[in-house]
Length: 598
Image (cartoon, rainbow, N blue to C red; front, side):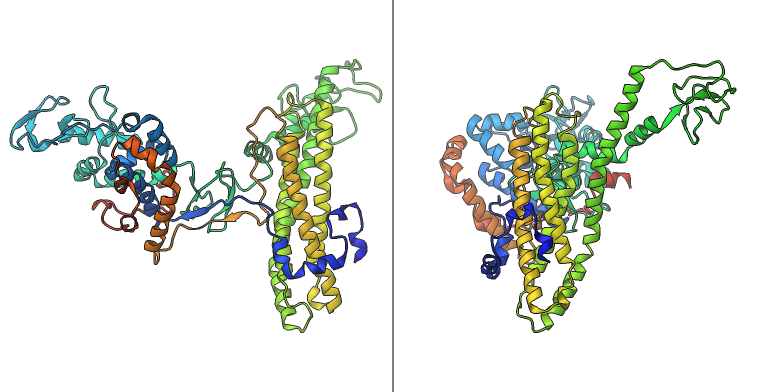
């Protein structure tokens, strides 16, 4: 067994077995990341979507003393970025904050109190006289008849502009009151009013850069919210792992742009075209590709056209052992030969990286079966009276194997584009590319060798071994787990600092490495303790916004900090007080565009 661990890759191991034994009591800490950023990831279900949206709405409503639809208008304009909204408020003031977002407030607005409901008024749109109660005035002060407003709202909702319906008046950019829109539309088209409500609700996901739908297929109905950095990989509660930045499957250490190119290259017909270019010739008559299946250089297409395999030129059907009758192509054509050689070289390079990517991906699928096998062996071993009582090293080693195997798998698409001519041809000289490629491939090979060893030891039937042999396997699994974790970190540091960090084109950022794997999202909060959770959110919001208080008071011009503070009593009111009586919780099992197609 010790022979399997010899080699230069062992530099990442402990210097002796005794040092490994000293760490067995704290083996769990060996698999924890040395440093990791706390990225809070939450699952927003159809039940918690409304509560998640209202959490941000309340922060703005209580700070600026606004109605709910005004706060929603501001948040939709600023893409639900509360911190950015606060920053604009401090820098530019309240008036600028409102005017840019389309909020207009009239001073001393009496809201039609001065106009009798029975008096006649003229609508400037349809040019008809209607009774006062059939007219509606918006916050901007413009009044039109209810029929014209309803037609305007219907058109805008059907055009997909539900989230920001502007006033009908000429050159007025004020946003219409959503309660007015809902009331007038629901009278004649209740289904359209529901569509309007759904769009407003889903704007929290569609317009929020920190919230995205889970891209699982079939769609699980969940959305994921991250608190800190959108450049991360997350796992939904449904089990699907994906890159939050591009919503593709988790692909680190590939950048999003690299993975998109690789995915297209693997699934479209680009490599089929390359194969056809290398292994077939085009018929000069019907222009279909023809594959040669014999040794003779005079080939005949299905259309009965004969041509020379060497040059592709049309010929007659007569030929001898030495030449084709009436045809000679002995002259060298440099451009065509170079083109064919280049296509052949590109195909061989692609196949080199694709075969290794595919091999490690297949290994990951096969090793997934290890999970059941490990649990079975651990369960059986715990029933035996062995010296090691704790077998968490086996499950920890399995998790490390899964994580490192994924890293190796996606390192091959990264290397394909990093050291090819498609993306960085003008960023590196050939000498610099060769140095960087050797540096990366050395680390890749060391990681690959240690991962294969870890996989081998985890497959050992340790449940059938004696104490001393189980201890040896335990030491090696822990050592290899630490080794592959260290090598993964070094590979990511190499990619971020030595490879991508030195390039001028800064669009290829990669997700930071996490030793404990892709972060699994937790529920926004459960229904049974929603009030307690909202209270905690309120307290954390106080902490997060306390630094803004003095400057916000100046920007608001109120000087009353009590009005802008976040009260736990207020924040706990999740039912009724801010809920519109006509708003219902909609079925969000799929995104809006999917619902529209049904």
